Amino acid sequence: MILTHDVILNEIAAGRLVIDPFHPDQVGPASIDLHLGDEIRVMEGGPAVIDLDDDADYRAVTQVRPLTQPYVLRPGETIHGITRERIRLPPDVAGWLEGRSRYARLGIMIHVTSGFVAPGVDNRQVLEMANVAGRPLRIRAGTRLCQIVLQRAEGSAVYSGRFADQQRI
Image 1: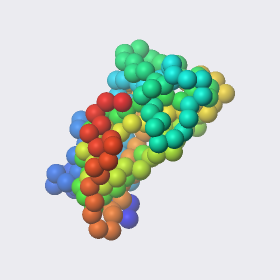
Image 2: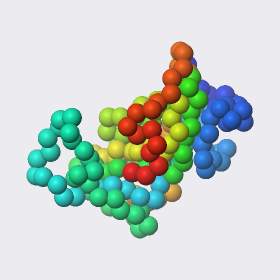
Image 3: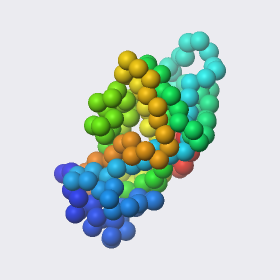
């Protein structure tokens, strides 16, 4: 069951759902807009070919950069961004990160493959952003670049995996 505007606001008022920082105008009919944070991780260095095995680590082939100035995302390029907002979900609510259509129509993908946000998370969300347009796209910190769609889970769970304490890229 997807949570709608009034249910989202009730969950926030009850303290079960935390978005920090938050302003009520971020809540749409059935999602919450999220802002791009102030750092990105770009592909730089590492081997010419990356082996996708259990030892693969994105940090070995990427570098963190502050997003104090706009970044030009080249066609075909993939980078990591992070939400400005820290998100805390209750154990019976999960979410999906989605792009916003105004930007998707210009060619930016917000998550390449891992848009699921597990129940019970308490962190900022990494965005695997890719430019699928035929021209460069300029991105800026603070843009409402994506949204999270929330849904009730049957039962409850709390994410405690590798990225549980993720506050930086």
